[in-house]
Image 1 (cartoon, rainbow, N blue to C red):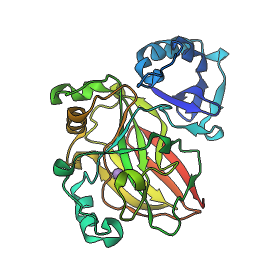
Image 2: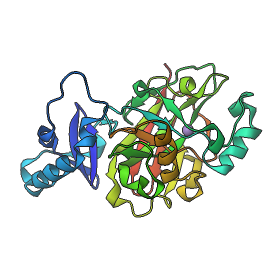
Image 3: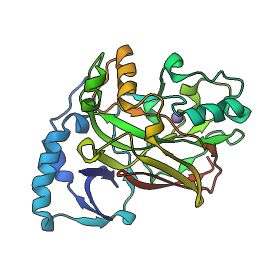
Image 4: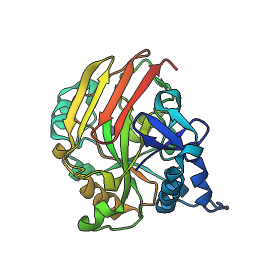
Length: 288
Ligand code: MN
């Protein structure tokens, strides 16, 4: 099942190039009280929401239909507790990063097995329809397309053989980056610099997450084109590593790292990102 969030926090069932407004399925979510949970309420109750969406869609002629091109797509996870991200997790990107001073800025680029993972501010999360505003126009700002796993079942010290069963869904991510000497967590956390979309695709729809093609074009020119089979630490490894340090909660998102081909973007550029089975999203860039 592919579910999007759109317009004014509506919930949509994606059907080809249309969406069915299934917002009333959100009524199955229990009321949230203070203190707020550490999980995303939609993701933790995704099975119940899916059942209700299926029931509603069976009587679909009473629901509103929209063309996908007519709606504003929001990030499929509204309240991720953490945005976990993998630095340099494709070998060819490691080579590229070490050779290009514009990428490494005298920062040591280490192997992911040694340097581990980093976190991005959750306030940086945006949907594809929000125009991305360049945060530091005097710096190099790059696109990084990444496969994103959305945690469905939380856990600490998750075993590798169980790891993929903790994933509720996948989506496309753009780990937008200001290059420079600062820590990654700062350079990759300006508002809007974590683009998630175009919708979530439940994990049961993805036969082999380690055989997905990723591609991003800027103004129609292909910049990154790779396959998740070339991940250094695969998706299960990343869950093992992350959960060995901290508890993962439903709705936490894991950005699995970007392949070679990162490059600078400028105001006015149009990005088109796609991953096999997860859809395609267009993101426009503007000046701050
Ligand atoms: Mn990245």
